Amino acid sequence: MTVDVFLRHRHGAFALDVSFAAQSGMTALFGPSGAGKSTIVGAIAGLLRPQEGRIAVNGRVLLDTAARICVPAALRRTAVVLQDARLFLHMSVEDNLLFGWRRAQTKADAATIAHIVELLGLGGLLARRPQRLSGGEKSRVALGRALLAAPDMLLLDEPLAALDAARRREILPYLEKLAREARLPMLYVSHSVDEVARLADTIVVIENGRVKAQGPAFDLLTDIDAIAGVPPLGAVFVATVREHRVDGLSLLAFDGGVLAVSRLAQAVGTSLRVRLRAEDVMLAREEPRAISANNVLPCTVSAMRASGDQADVQLLCGATRLVARITSASLARLGLEPGLAVFAIVKSVIVEREAG
Amino acid sequence: MHEILSPAESQALLLSLRVSSVAVVAALPFAFATALFLARVRFAGKALVNGIVHLPLVLPPVAVGFLLLVVFGSRGPVGGWLEAHLGIRFVFNWTGAVLASALITFPLQVRAIRLALEGSDATLGEAARTLGAGPLDRLVNITLPLALPGIVSGAITAFAASLGEFGAIITFVSNIPGQTQTLPLAIYAALQVPGGETEAARLCGLSILLALIVMTAGEFAGRRARP
Image (tube, rainbow over all chains, first blue to last red; front, side, top):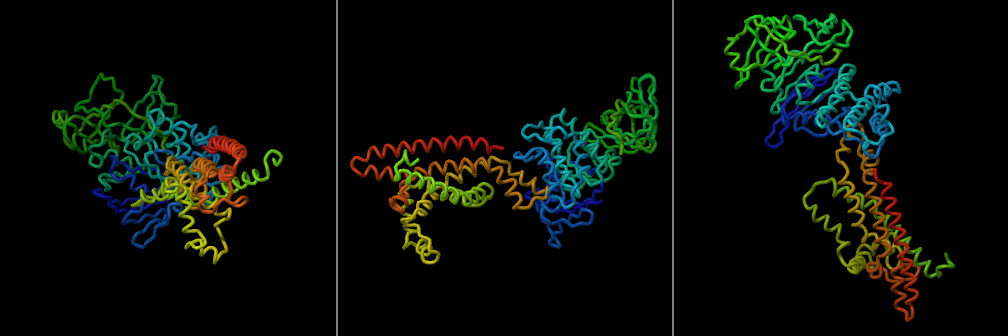
């Protein structure tokens, strides 16, 4: 399952010129507002016709301006979920969910429907009207409606942007389950590093209408040149639960060492996606002793980048890449340079989800 | 009914109901298309088109009736052709009363439907598109249901206004009992006869009763149609 996208589009002073590929799983289109992310989604869904472009999903050409092919939106099988859920107000939740299903060429069977309803926790909402749903419930219905349309590809354009922090926390687990389970390519548009770090397998960084970088999330989030200037970047990697200790800590083994975190519920052997935010990592030239932080990792500096009074330092801890965000003053004071051995003091470890 | 109302009275009442309902139903598809066009299509000169659509509401009904006579009369360009080729005749006929009523109340229907369309979320059509719904599918399953409250309230208002139409009908198709003499025309005719005030008062009471029934039913239907 692959999606190939090439687009060129001019609209006033804004010029879009992108080319990228997405595989099954969650690909994040990441970048600041106004970078052109939503234009890309519109062009893929067929809601907007670019001046030049070629889009193919699993080899099926949806758009090819050179060959004068432009499949109508209704026939593209690219379901879209936007920040406003856009539920049909004159229908029940059930009819909303089945809207795309009724029009799909290959219909999901009853078991699949039941599974999606359960996955998104929609069982109790079926008879309700969209007017009587909370924001989070609306988002879940919109997600379910898109999935049941049996799309070849799912486009998620800032699906959480309209929700407050609490509602976001409510939806994210559902998106995580989706990211882990669904076999179809999903394009997730966001300008939130938190969401991207948590969900994406692959990241395409869009800036000023161009692809600035693309690659696996594990590599790209620690690539200090690709995501320079974006607030809290960090390392994302997979770690395995090794031991639950009696002192209330759990040990996570990763390719580069061991992390101690507060007691986890997951069983020993479970693979977890872990994130170390750049600003949660401090650096020391000598091994600190008598320190409250549970995790001090020996690392090697691999690259540095200072911008203004802040600096990002890329580290190698075994085979795992980490990033520390420090001040430019500290960078100078410590005399950091590539190849230097340092100690990374990790203030907090974010356990994102079970790795799929 | 015939024991309460005289044959002439019930004839005027039934004709009024028939003229108004046919006028509303016949104009509805055109009103919906016009409202959809005005609500969803952006084009230069929209204000002018909107003004033309609303003309029958602003013009004196007598002027509308006169213009209808000029265009749809037996010697008019359209009326003459229709009579010669299709055998359709408006003048002195109840269908002429329907045409006059439909035209006068057309803007009321357009207005109500357009407001409902503009108040409903146009992006829902986009959502339906990405879920596999083609143009006709979207019209029937998304646009029409969302416009339904406007369609109902527009139809009721137009029906009520049509019951009271006088000037355009009497100018275009004259005042012929059983053909074009609706309730208001019957009241006018009664007042032309010496001692006809009692008859006029009875017809007037009938009109009031009818108006109240229609408006109450309209309020109820409008509430039911809301999504």
